[in-house]
Image 1 (cartoon, one colour):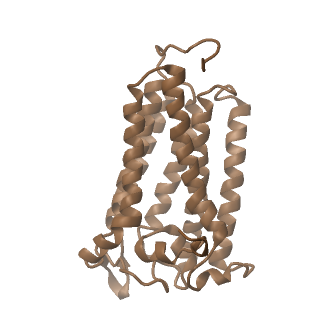
Image 2 (image 1 turned 180 degrees about the vertical axis):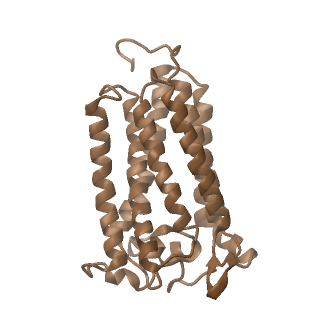
Amino acid sequence: MGSTQFGNFDNFCRDSTLPVCNVLSDFHNQTGPWGGCELTGIPLSDGRFLGNLGSILLSGIAIAASIFLLLRSERKRAAVGRREMQAFLAGYIVISICEIFTIGEFPLSNRVRIAFSGIHIGFIIATTWILLLNAVIGYQLVDDGTPLSMGILLATAAALLIGTGYIALDTGFQWTGYWNSSYQLPNRNIALYVLYQLAPLVFIVGFFVLETILVLRVLRETMPMVYLAGAAVLFALGQIFTYVVSPHICTGTVGKIDGSLFETLFTLLSVVTIWFFWSSITEDDWPMPVGNTFP
């Protein structure tokens, strides 16, 4: 991507269904100056439509699955990072709720859709940051589950959530007018580009790198890597369907579905696999090395 394209969302919104497009569109939905295949889904009365029924249903399943895993993790009281993992699952639950009303193309008023989109974007960066801290916790630099550990996690996540959410909401509601140029092609918004597109990717890659080092060099095990690698592949598939395959699916189905349905599915499977990975490395019988863990 050339430097002149940095911060531009026109190609992303043309080819994909993303919450950020709702705040960059004059119509505050997925329709904007970028063109592309329009997701129409199921027609309703008065010219309305339910754009993405598949994503809505899968988001509901993701909410139920995350609540189940959150409650199940409560039983693993001796597990390292239990509270931190629960915080990650709680963030993912909020993201899944927001997906119903943002990329689910649920019929809403413009103001309500902007609000859900701002919350969605804010929780994406906050939740991926919490995921990264889950990997850091495994090194026991700070005792997990303590007020200090949870305080750092929640305070830093809240700062990212509030900052990113404010920028998204100010862009959509035009409170200050500072971001109004984002409504014109190429829909350039460097702040949202960094906070929504780049930072979460860095956090996720950091999580996989730190967990790989933890498993292979600290625990000296290989079996948990099956879960970790599986989660990485599933997440990558979701991104491929969102950014690469989506326009072809939309065109081929005449706007009935697009890649966001599969992104929701593969992200759900990735989150579930991450939970099983965490569960597999926090069993009581794992040998924890004493002394220098990096000979």
